[in-house]
Structures are given as C-alpha cells and as structure tokens.
Image (cartoon, rainbow, N blue to C red; front, side, top):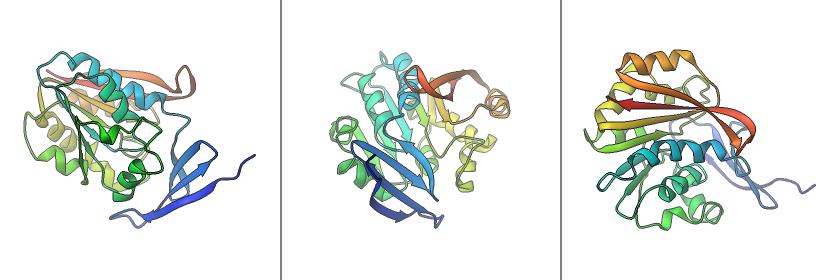
Length: 223
C-alpha cells in the first residue's frame, strides 16, 4: 500500500494546533491535532449539504449564499453546480493555507471551484462575515469543525450557541436557509434552532453517496 506523504503543515490561527495535509496516491487527507478532519474519498455529505441548501433557492433572482469552511472545495463545487449563472457564492475560510491548498494540491479534486467567477473568497472567521450585513444571504452553510456537538476547537462553539444562531438568522433573507453539517446527530441543537424560530428538518446523509458513515445536516428555514 502507498504510504501517506506529508505535503504541508501549518499552525491553526488562534488555536495553536497543527493542521496537516497528506497525500496517498490520488487520495488526500487533512488532519487537525492528528485527528483526520476530512478525506477526499468521503465528501458525499458535504455535497448533500450544498444540494439541500441551494436547490430550493436556485430560482431566486441573483441568489447569494455563504459557505463557512472551504475544506477541500467539495461543498463549494456542489453549491456552484446547483445554482445559476447569476448567483454569488461567498466562502469564508479562516486558515490561509487551506485556501492555498485549494489553489494548488487540491485544485483538481472539485474542478477548480475557486476559479469560478461566481466565487468570492474571504480569508476570515465565518462568524465575523455573518455579522457584516443583515438580510444578505439566501442560504448560509456551516461546515465548520465536526459540528455543534463534536468540536475539535472550542472556539467554534460560538457559531452554534443560541446567540450565534440568532446572528445567522439576522443575516438571512426572508425564507432563507441555514444548513449545518455535523459528524453526529444532536437533539439539543435541533431544539436550539426551533427555539430561535426556525422551521427545522434534520437529514441523515452518507459520507460516500449511499455508503460510508452517517452524517447529519440540519436544514433550518427562516420563517
């Protein structure tokens, strides 16, 4: 079997933990603190997050969506594929190296989505981007860390608190959708979303199409 080769290693801003990019033949892996965060062979649930959020709003005039977390570009690619030519997809990514990797080592994985003219990249904390403007997005997709109850970096918790949910709701346009990816289900987060006034659906999706681990996507509609 081909061994894993370390391509790059960086320190995560504000955390101090190591983020590493590995390659084995045609497979890539990103780990944080030696725990695998994502793998290029398993992105079915990221694709599903974008499809669930973008299909319902694709026919709106000039739809605008925000993705929190670039990852390997699969969520971005799926969003672009489910939206028309007049859409704008804003991606907020905190770690500069992840943006660089998607321009180099990982660029071909998702068909170079950063080169799509509809893509706008902001090297920033998605929480700060959400706060910039009210009624700004038709959909917000959060693929940050491992989800509300499976964090590797506690600083990400603010996105999933009631206060964080309220901020996201304010940033959505009427009828807008908040989509949240998680490695695990969680009834407490469902209750939090409903308590903020969202209409909520909890969807189980697979990591590899119809196979692989079961992941969860919360689809919350602003009433």
